[in-house]
Every structure is written in C-alpha cells, then in structure tokens.
Image (cartoon, helix red, strand yellow):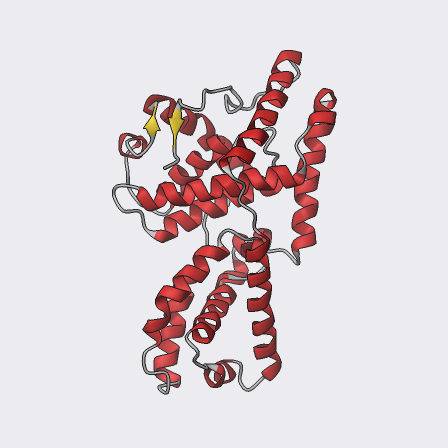
Length: 298
C-alpha cells in the first residue's frame, strides 16, 4: 500500500546526493533571482544549520505543547519542515515562520483538534503576530508541499513487528522492553535525511534491530524468519543501522550564538532584497520581525 502513495512516489529518493542536488538547486535559484546578494548569500551548510536549529525548536515546542501533542503530529510537522526546505531556500522563507506553520498544519492533518487560540497560547510573546504568520503562510506551505500532506510513520510498523514477533518468534518473550530505545531511535531519525531514503517500515525494522543490539539481545533468528532465510537482507539491514548512526553523528545543531550570526546574515539579505524592490512576495512571510515578537524557544 505504501508504494502507491505520494510519500513513496515523490518523497523517497535514491541517495543523499539527490537531496544535496535539490537543496543546491534551491540555493542557486534564489541567487540567480537576486544577483545583488550573490556575494553575501547563505551557503548550503548555513541553510542546513538553520533548519536543524529550528527542527530542534519545533521538537521542543511540540514536547511542551498543552494539551499533550501525539508524537505522530510532531513527526508530521518535521516531515513538512524538511520537505519544504528540500526545494526552497532559507533565504526566501525564514524557518522561524515556516516551522510554526508546519506544526499548525500537521495538527490539522492529523486531526489533533486545537483552535488557533489554543495553539498560540503555547507561544511566548506576541500571540496575535504568531497567528497572523501561521494564517499568512498556511496556503503557501501546502502549495510548496504540492498538497501532499499525508505522512506515513514508522510507529504503526513497529506495532506490526511486535505482533509478528509474539506470533512467530515466542523465544523473544518481551519485545515491549525495546520500546524506549525504539522510540528514541525513531525520534533521532526524524532529524536526519533517512526519512527521504528509507520507507517507514524499513526505519521501524532498523529501530527494532538497534534496540535489540543495545539490549545485548539477538533477534537475528526472527529477522531470518521475516526475510525467509535470506541472509543478505539481514546484512543489508545492519548496514542501514550503521548508516543511520553515521548520519546522526554528522548532524550539527549550531549554538544560539552561531545561529544568531547566520540569522543576522539572513536579515541583511532580506533587507537588501526589500530595499532593491526586486523581491517577489507570495505572502508576507519575509517581513522583518523583532525576535521577541513571538518565541517558540524554551
């Protein structure tokens, strides 16, 4: 069923090189539209750092949200944020604005019913400004995501594997003990590009193997049952777990100080564009706001 979805058809890619090409294209496209800022433009590394920084803020905001926000809503919001900046430049759309819009849209799509008043009550600072930003960017976000808003998550696959283990591999008496490790692993995966490369059920299986290894258990016999005796599949799965761990080590979330430097550079770019009167405004997304207008940080 997953292979017939837009998630699989349009948001699963061959490798990280394809992702880099897309981000580079977005960066190059922005530079070509605004040659006056070419020498001062953000690099891909700076754009990625800023997205990583706001991804962490998004997670923290969702974790503190009242009422309690289901984890699949957080996951959907993170998918939206990462998808958006796969094809769009930070220089054109500030992550601070897109991030809060991603959370609000994810809550809608996942039927986590909260009113706008409830939503902005979780925002520190100017709540009216936050509401305006969300409403001004919601349609833009949906458009840039090609209205492909249904996200498939690893969580259901994890439950399916637990049921399968109890049925076909009773030697593993208590697979539920792996839950905390699995949940942590999947949460970390959401911060990486693995969500653009592996299907959700593959991520779930990697999480299961990782949890068993961390618990100093072996579920190789179960996996061979699952793979119908194909040892190459088991070897491949272990390689993916190793790959994910490598990706996690590469993630660099910049300090607030470094982030401030990048944001100052970004503010200069946006001011240059505004002053030259060449910016093409799809929404009011690029208006300059004081940092204290609304805050989603702890």
